[in-house]
Image (tube, rainbow, N blue to C red; front, side, top):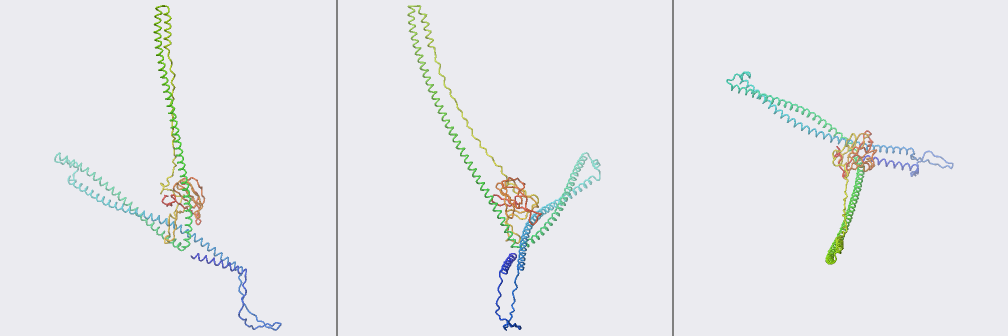
Length: 561
């Protein structure tokens, strides 16, 4: 508010200076009339006519020169430059404060995670220490019991042997059976001693192992406690720094709101551009799907029409073949009937001829007999005629050849449909395991979603992705294979590259020199371009990274490892 009032005051001064200089250069105000009577003076001047005149004394106003106007203009310009420089300094300070605040929030979150991890580790170590202490106490009691039993048994054995050696103890038996019992007892006692000694040694080794584990756990506990105290101290220092940054930002509340409003407008412009690109790609994909669906339906229709035409042709060919076969069979039947009739007629004719010939023969024979009886010489001639008649009757006709039929075979072949399945990337299955979108250092300065500053709940910035500080000269890298869908110049984000991964999209902002173009296929880890250096700190760069599922924004931190 102070800056706004000061700028307004400077503007008013400039306008007044402009009008004052213009009026002084173009117009001189007239002298006002003195309504008062002039006071008489002691000195009088006589004219030639003898008249006296009175001299009137009047003060003239001081006239402003062009040098004064120029000096005022230079002063006004100087104040304007100072105001502009102060605005730039405030903008730079706010930007730096927001970046520092974002880094501190990341450090604070990391410190809290470390403290939670160390607290859980301490709880686990305390449990282990308690368990080890209880086990050590139990093992010490068991070891003491074993040792006491061993000592009692050894003392009792010594009393029983009466300070004799084992051999003397056996030979001191009253009879052979007692000697055998003593030998068996000595053997059993020796085995028991070995077992008891082994049990004592095992318990002792186990106790030493547990004591060593206890010492190691306590040492680790001390180290974890020191680390936790260090992290807590660091966390307190981070909170102090955070409070200081928030206090500085609170001093420039209006400028902070203006900066975040501008930043939000740039983010909204980027979001609108991304949403429009995704909507356009989805529209094209839907059109392509419909086109392919129509092409498939048309191909199926044509295939069905071709199948029906083929079936009709096959059916007509079968009907034609059946008709031709029926006609041939009818012709064959008629021919067979004709042949049968001809054969029957021929047979009847032959029978008639045979009958007539027989009658003729009988008649001729009878005549011959009669003639032979009257003329013996004619018998030889009649016998020749009889033989000739028999040759004529024995002649036969050859049947006409029967026509042959042909079998037509048709073969049909069904076309094989082959389909190709396009290999699609499994971007959804990479959630939580995608690589970082840059090479080298990667430090979060602004997280995803609506972010409100501590103690400034009304100052809110809705980040569609994440912003991270990187090393100077770092390059943006594709986190997964895909196709470049867009390369845009967006105010506040330099060049933005959008990569399509099917139903998912990744966005890379603040690229100074892109090395890809629309339509390029990229692989995981491929360079997309060099990042722009920070205007206020040339030793660092920053990247803006987003993940979208169709038109839905996702938290990138849930996708990268």
